[in-house]
Image (cartoon, rainbow over the protein chains, first blue to last red):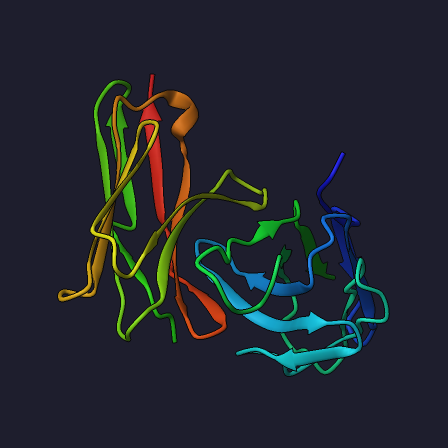
Length: 116
Length: 109
């Protein structure tokens, strides 16, 4: 059963804590992405990675960190430096970052993070 | 800032009617994609139209692209209650996709 998974589905964080959101894909995709979605809004890009051991900042990377040690995994850490972390976080993957007309992204089910 | 902006922000129709959503963008693009999101879920890719295409169909979906006006429209024909969701356009310029704010569609049975 191929796809992209995220865990946990719901996450609660106390102020000052770092939390890590998991994203795993078995689609053999090279590129992976993290987006943040606020209520009633579109998606904003946090970080992306086009290959193992490489990642780039998106539009709103401050207060977040990522790693890409394996092709299948792209965890996102929300650090205490992120002042307003309550949001819905979506992970996605695609065959490649660039090239060709097919650059559709496949999304995970999302993680809802709430700061207490 | 968002590249694509959907219009209207919200749309409510009766089952069986057609739903039209529009997307405007600012810069040149390689392609434009439409995605659907059910409440509290991830996005699902619906259709992709390349910058050199003007119209594309997929089942009950029809997408048009006017690069001179930097706009696209998504038409859902014979809507069903199950079409209730948010719909996002995403534009590809270079390596990245940029998403708009979405149109929330409600189809009443």
